[in-house]
Image 1 (cartoon, helix red, strand yellow):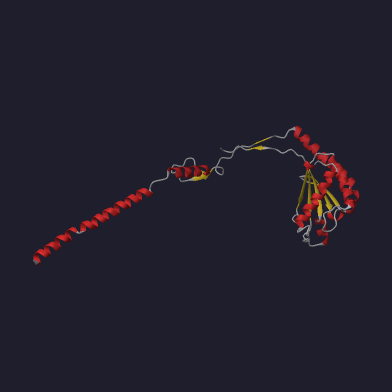
Image 2 (image 1 turned 90 degrees about the vertical axis):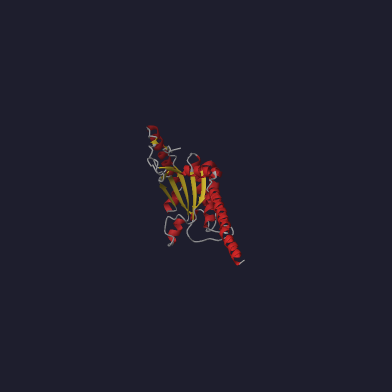
Length: 258
């Protein structure tokens, strides 16, 4: 009896490994199924990614590995640019514009001669054209943007000169660095902008085409003198009227790769 039981135990032990083996094979199969599933590429997403990368990069010519890439524009060969060559007609127009601007400057200088003599008005010629700097003290009361009566007369004379021309005009308001805070003007930005607008409105009323006018305020960001001194702050409080030159530009044709 003991011998038979021992034999049965030994028989059971020999067959038990099959269960473990079957479980192992099942898990191994499941593992390979999962690996196969995650290895499949979504073709639609792959194409989107490929098109996106292709639009930003391209393979460097001559590369066999395809690993090196370069930006389209940064690595593109320099292309020749064609410039319109100056002609005698262009030179003649430039000369005519400069003469007209200087005539305007001369007329403005005569119209504002007393203020120019007192140093309240400065007329300069620069790359943009003719600029008339008028001290704000002769135009506005401190902290105000309403033009004084004397200022109206002086600016009306300037407007009558500008109305007879077709040059673009930019009116800029400037202040010193002393802050202002009133219900009407919370900061120097508002004050400078409204002062420029007041001059523009007067020009329009005097017959200057509104399409030629631009008003802008710079607060204390573009000083012409040091704000440390009283004289410097006084110079910085100004209205700048720039009569822009109609110099024809020189267009440049640039051919970029498609």
